[in-house]
Length: 315
Image (cartoon, rainbow, N blue to C red; front, side, top):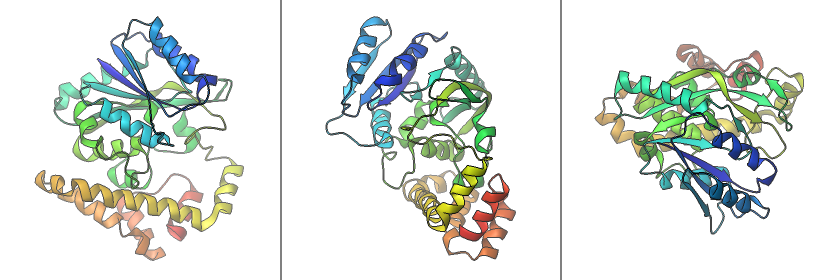
């Protein structure tokens, strides 16, 4: 059984379409848990109507008080799913391909056959980037945003490559991150899940878009057109301050990871991984030459010339 976790806030414009794409999945063994963050529109009515029309279990909770952000809402949902065998995140405004659940479960079963089911396992896929009206902008977010499809730990510490709405993961991963995913030092819940799976478990990538990722003005994160001159110009105009803030956030997340999981890493003899995270947390104190050496030796360059220049000069 797959437990789908959906965070909702004022989602009435696109919510019905996403719920319908879940209902139409060719894999029927799912249940849906939703947390509405005190929406002022008709989101709750839409959810309750959906719950009354489907045979699958649908639970709708209303946060009181509101968390005020998607990360906090999803973190609470992770705790709601402590008994779930398999877990997926769902945004309120995307559209899932009809075979998303079945393809992800097939890949999960492959991981279980190879590594067992007692360790954290995570499956994720590509997505197609779509406009507000669901016109396809790019068939691959990884190509569109200039992000690696698969990343080493060194690369992941610097930049997340796992899109939350594509993830399927198991109970050991859920229970490992649930108490901590909402902490201010965590950048986003999906990023934290990716780090945990990379260090303590196994991940697998499906090189196929299983979600139509809708781009609109209210996206919490959104896909970035990394090859666009306008995007590169904006990044340069944002300048050193914005870039440094992003690097500092990743360093704080890495330090927090060691704070809560450092002893476990030592117990499991993950000394190389431990040392790498320690080294990464000192990146803000490095000179330009030291940073360049770090990125070269760890092969943790970001994709794209402009990003590499910013890495060395600013972060």
